[in-house]
Image (cartoon, rainbow, N blue to C red; front, side, top):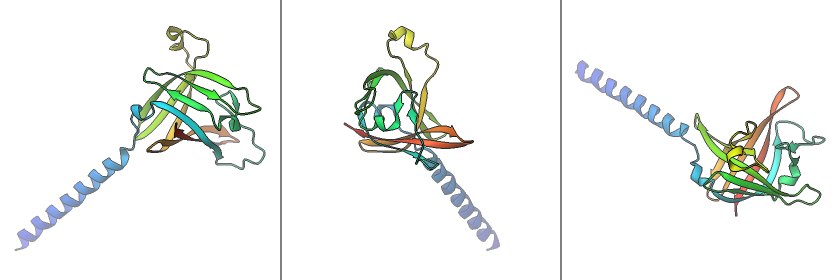
Length: 165
């Protein structure tokens, strides 16, 4: 009888450990497939998290003021050569050509792009500098991405809300 109790206890322990491990694997797999980004998107809102933003002036992606990205249209085609277009009043409007990609690392999806304005396709792959946004939330027809930046010795985040057009 003692032997049966020991075997039952061993089986229960193995089952609990197996369940715990399988749940952690599912939780870590929250990446977004590249094809989910393909299409046209509009930035419906922007914000800064991690600091008091009262007097903070943010120029996003070394381009224009953060408020100018609200209403911007982003195009992510299959071939990776896309664009974003600034439409806001009092902003330096127009289309910016980008080369975009995604990267999944440790269960986190990063949406990466580099500006390739005025470059031929064969020259654009030589651009070394770019930008990365961590996708923090994704659902049917929308996603939220954030860009970390260093500010006064700490990391703050610029957050972008994207809606499929």
